[in-house]
Length: 137
Image (cartoon, rainbow, N blue to C red; front, side):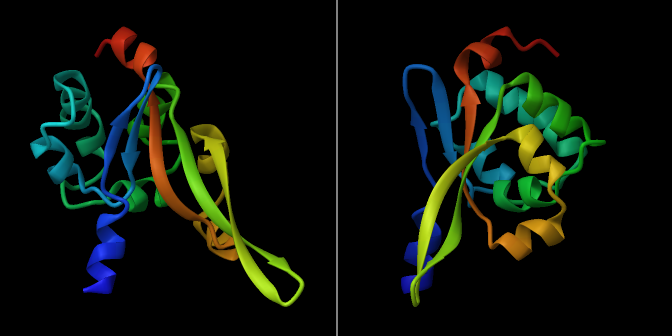
């Protein structure tokens, strides 16, 4: 039960003035069915992201293993995507978790092995509303 609750904590869609924030545990299939996702973003997922991944893939997994050669990388760059993540920091004898935000280019430049070595955990995808509005396929 606790694992399921923790898993659900990273399934959310929040829209502020300039960005759409999407929890990283959503699968693309769940996003396509969600009423919180606008039509244009659904079309971007269908037309572009599902070329590189299956509908059962989570945002977290897709972004973690994404390569710069993928079409979804190019689309995310156009959408001015950023990723919120946590990473462990040792302070004294304890471990603290800090948050930071990386651009999609910075994230994709790190290999999965480097992400694992740093202990990076992706928690959120952030998309620019203006870039989404201007995006044409």
